[in-house]
Amino acid sequence: MPTPPQRYTRTAMLLHWVLALALIGLLGMGLYMTGLPFSPQRLKLYNWHKWAGITLLTLSALRLLWRATHRPPALPAAIQNAMPAWQRAAHHGTHHLLYLLFFAVPLIGWAYSSAAGFPVVFLGLWQLPDFVPASKELAEAIKPWHRITAYALAGLIVLHVAAALKHQFIDRDGLLARMWPGPR
Image (tube, rainbow, N blue to C red; front, side, top):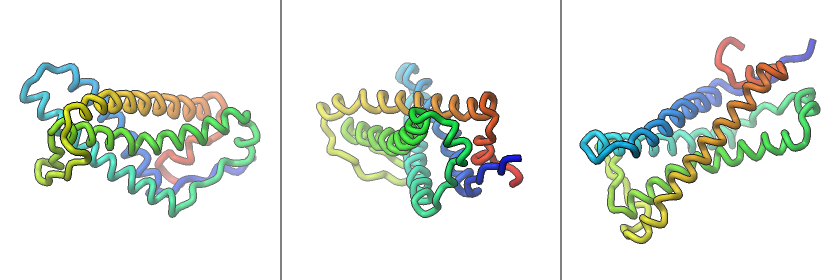
């Protein structure tokens, strides 16, 4: 009977799943609100989207700090040996790109808001400093990058989930249990 894979810490699991749910909600909200006509509802959703983005940025920083100070469990040797080299490269590359986009997407959104002259007021209470100076030309240059990086993040999330499901239902190697909450 093979030894079950080592699990992530409870804190790592909590940060993973909260960030995952927040990202899915934020991506859905972004798609929904951009299709709305100009209205008080649309403005309210844009403000909520900004608050959620700043919260996501903070959670991402906490997750990165946790990851830097708490080494994740290594892939079990049996799983690592069964993976072709391209899958191991995709595994590492996807995780690195996810972390990059956890920061890039909200920072680009903040930069766009600042350049467009729309302040980011966190929770309606604290106005955050402008990330870049107000400039119509800069806003137009930045605007598509928030959408592009958000779609890239969504694509990587789909890839990540698909890989986890492959390990769970096709390979049946127990890899998903490392990040799944519940009894140890």
